[in-house]
Image (cartoon, rainbow, N blue to C red; front, side, top):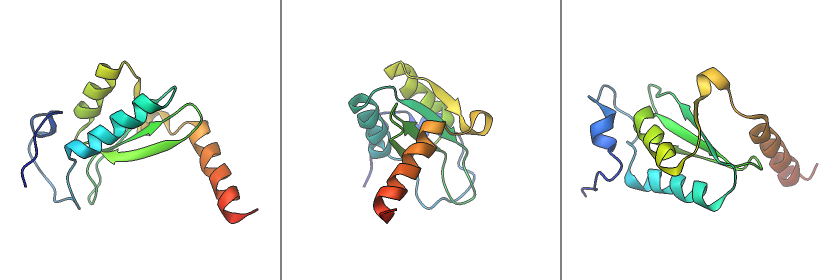
Length: 114
């Protein structure tokens, strides 16, 4: 099944070098956009591509809630962030925000009953 290249995934990705578990799709980008539009204070954090996984972005809301999706290349999430007027950071330079770690810890305590 062919999908539309609405977000420039093919154009902005450049030449394909590695075989990933799967590539980014429009649905991945749309999920990040929906998350950003439905929450306050969202920031994007770009994660580098690895041998097994395409470039990903983590969207983190002001309460620490987050979601991760494949984006194909940093240029794609930079374009999305620019269109939504939201900040985007390189996680290798900034790390993850403390509120994300606090959110994860809170969820672990709630799920574990501690």
